[in-house]
Image (cartoon, rainbow, N blue to C red; front, side):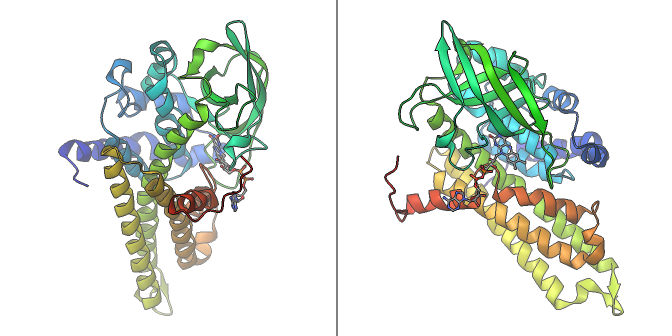
Length: 386
Ligand SMILES: Cc1cc2nc3c(=O)[nH]c(=O)nc-3n(C[C@H](O)[C@H](O)[C@H](O)COP(=O)(O)OP(=O)(O)OC[C@H]3O[C@@H](n4cnc5c(N)ncnc54)[C@H](O)[C@@H]3O)c2cc1C
């Protein structure tokens, strides 16, 4: 991957922004179990960070996806997982399909303010009865006059208590599960939408995760993204960027924890010498660093292929799989070398341990990635139930 001066400048300016506007407040936001998404996104939007790859006509910068990758990686400098996750959700999870397939009208209404940071977006795919199996979602959007009337509910909605709109996946017909779904922009202040609860979690504390009820919610059909019935396909494409983003977003967080562990074990003396001088420790850290660099190469290669228009389903799934596992491995191994200090709630390594656990579950669990990779390898048995 060849990075230009512009890539490096993006890295530097994001780091400056994080040092001034994010990291000083992370502990407070983690304790409050929410961060001020509107405040922060307005600042990010003003500097153009929320629309790097989005069309210029809607306030974006029209850059290629390598800039999104650099941003995802640079956000690893944030001292928690929750804030980068919410930013990534806005830029690379809830808006790619809208930017690609939305009408001009719907892009002006939802995309432009999301790029500006005036709107916070959320993604409504998962439900109580359908997470890994996206085709099994039950929420429906029935046509009535010029409207859709939506019934159902969404689970695990990141930024769900603060969001202005949701990129909603709903069933719009009875047909085959992969061809009966539609993506719809759903304004979150519409009557019939209730935030049923803010979900308490073991990590990603500063992220507000919500369960949402949708009861007789009426929105105009013109809020549909692209064609009716293609929502599942659009969402699968949208997942590519989400998965590449997850791969890139893991790298610097791992580097950060390894570096913090080097510092800690260099200072901490046990049996009269720095912990780091034990071969078992510096060898393990060297091994983990090698794994991070291997993942970095995979992510950069996937990005290059993506830019060249090559289908990256396999590489993106591999990157997501390895990222989830590596973050857990790095956090767990490093926590061990911090001893009791690593077991403290507020230690950086404990936060990484808690936040990083989501990587193997959210946005497609490890097993779902293995299923996709197996399918592309031609080794997945055909079940024939769909
Ligand atoms: C903090 C958090 C934030 C989230 N944010 C969002 C969001 O903003 N929007 C959204 O739509 N969703 C969001 N999600 C949902 C997330 O994407 C799902 O949790 C994930 O897809 C897994 O679905 P599930 O939890 O229903 O697990 P299930 O589908 O019930 O699966 C449980 C476990 O079964 C195993 N499994 C699954 N399939 C297979 C298989 N084929 N073979 C073997 N084992 C298998 C996996 O280990 C998996 O973890 C979020 C989740 C969390 C926890």
